[in-house]
Image (cartoon, rainbow, N blue to C red; front, top):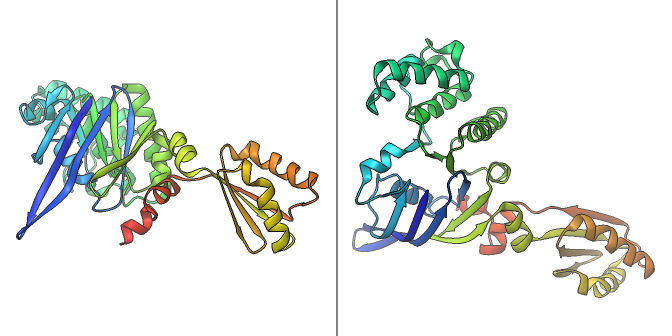
Length: 317
């Protein structure tokens, strides 16, 4: 559904050339839900704009839904749905009118557009609000109306650009459930950008991480966390001497071992099984731990291991 090779975009700022995207390769198969992660300024939005034909690549190739973004941009637009960060619906229009108009823009007859609008309003839990104006809806309801707009023409591929930005935690959770349900019922391919790492972890089968215009990691959330971050066991020992002895004993069983005062920190694979083994080994050596804590890594830990900073720190910078 998405195939790029060496996709790049430069911008000229005064006399300097800024390489916003530096030649990335992306492959997304039909039916996949892929999350595209990276800090502000990393190249996410620029990449999305190239894939949706609103920005011309400087170099490289991209095929989206079977069509070349340069040779057949109109065909690309016919095949995709796009839901941006802001609301795409008009504040004063009724929901049903907005959907029908959108369907007509895509060449649907009035009858087909009204039928499709009714289907989507029912699917997204908005059927009882069809004649309400957009401005009277809650934030979560407006986002569902945006999703309905993006689905009016039955796209094979849906781009979701930070769809939950600005929503409260409850509405974010509701929207995530809607995305999962829609994908299961409609079988579409979804390409998602988000600032909420837990959202990507929960929804995506595969994650692409971009930083400074380059894709620096790709894989399932579980693969990335296990390979690049690892589970962390923190042991509180009786004193610094005991901590050093414990670290020496456990060094071969951990990917990384560090000591700070009376604390030993182990980076391991499969922490849930490694923790009891570690405690048994310490007990057998008469080095019992006073405290033990297991921490499962997040996608932010993956980014930290790759770049030396967290995604949140990168965004703040």
